[in-house]
Amino acid sequence: MRHDDILNRSRELNQKLTVLDTHLDTPSRVLNLPDWALHEKSEETLVDLPRMRAAGVNAPFMVVYTSPSLKGQDALAHALALSDVISGWVEEYPRELSLARAASDVPAAKRAGKISVVMCMENSSPILEGRLDLVRTFYRLGVRYMSLCHFKNNHLCDSSTDDPLHGGVSKFGEEVIAEANRLGIMLDVSHISDDAVRDHLRLSKAPIIASHSNVRKLCDHPRNLTDELIRGIARGGGVIQLNFAAQYVSADYLVKYNERKALLELKEKEIDERFAGQEEKAKAEKEKLSASTPRPPPPPLEDWFEHVDYIADLVGKEFIGLGSDFDGIGAWPGELEDITSIDLITAGLLKRGWSEKELAGFYSGNLLRVWRKVEEVAGR
Ligand SMILES: [Zn+2]
Image 1 (cartoon, protein in one colour):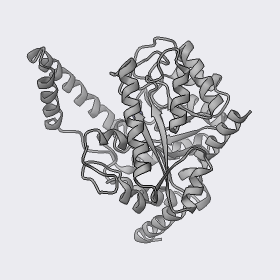
Image 2 (tube, rainbow, N blue to C red):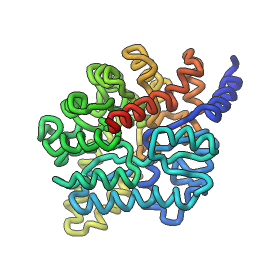
Image 3 (tube, rainbow, N blue to C red):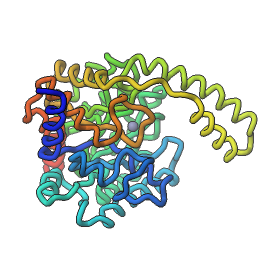
């Protein structure tokens, strides 16, 4: 088939298949865009209602993300505000959107011509120490997967990008895992330390997911998954949803990314010294600095497909899906413009010989298999 024919076929398939993306940070973008409405095409985001429709996305997983810098009540207040953004969208567009509370809601919404919004939690710092009731509160609000921590350790879990504190999951983190199993919340191991992933594999009674993670063998960032962990997740029946963040896709990009990061950190330290006690001014200077420091050129999309091929060879196509991280990342493969670019993903998979059935698994079947199993375990 010619390239144009493959692209047309890809667009048709994406409209036909049930398509989900397990990691969209669009809710966090809203906090800086108070005048933007989801039905408007925004220059500032990669995702909105018209583009989800155009892309054929049926189930966007909208993330309640809490920065590791927020602690205690501040973390909780922030998470509640973000969950309000997501619930607010569903209320504002009742003809377009519905909130998914069960795996079966996703295909049902597609049949009804609606987009099924799934609420999920990245970094569970808002689940305050000893407060398992908050797991239940967020479940009732709609949260259907949760990751215990982000770039920094917290009271629940060690991060892949911090020094070990608990040696994996903390005692209270173990209780949160058990409560998530009991309620039917999927457990997400993106961002957590290798030992913490092993603890999840040991403790969780249901399969687990990596909502937005790639292969460490191809791009050596601690945030990516080792072969051992990929095998462990697959053996448990879980799924790895691949991420577009350039620094987790390409080893070459990661080197340049780290150089830029080191340079920025050095200059930010100078800014902190120069504007000691003037927090707002320092923040503005840092933003100016980041905007004026060029980013490395993005990697080609072909590099991302290497992660797909690698996991397919290691454990099989039934353990792979998409967790783009759009609206949460600074750089992604150059061919991708926004959420509508997933036709290029379909085209690439078709060229690699993926069948329609395998694509159906990639776009939703594999993740929904996990979700249904998590529900089954909760029902026991
Ligand atoms: Zn993330």
